[in-house]
Length: 250
Image (cartoon, rainbow, N blue to C red):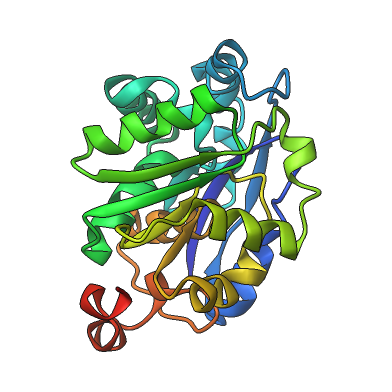
């Protein structure tokens, strides 16, 4: 059995993770441990506090008892808001506290884009403009070209968690760009796993979403390969990706 421990701020769209477990249909387990998010706000000061070492380390002991082989800070804005170097330091501190390989959803996006060979992406975000711009800067620091950004201006994770299928699809369509080889939906508070296949069909290209890439990154850290239908191109077998590579997405 492979267990990826997920540190998730508050309560919003964490039910995406049991859905992923079912779709993986294997011995992979994704235990979720809720961290105290403090103030629910997509605002720089609140996000910095949300991802503080003290808040993350509070969930580490329980995570180790669950037999986790890797640990993920399942929050995008609470990591990239620190910038490229600050996000690295955040995961280093988490790895030391847990005694396990650690990463965050921000790095999961960067690594997933690279794994798909997509050099240009579009961002379709629920965040305010300034937070969306910070994510674009983070991706550029990873060597990824950002073709377009779409900010929805939503301040709280609580509101984002209420979005349903049609709102998610509309966000992805609005955020897409003809030059983008993949579209990124970065908020872990947004329910997306049930819509991954429909999102990719609608856009005709890979779609990466926060809870999806978080699990993929945790499995990568645990040196576990997993393929599954219903979880998008990222979880497709390599031979299937070759048949529908970037040259076919345009």
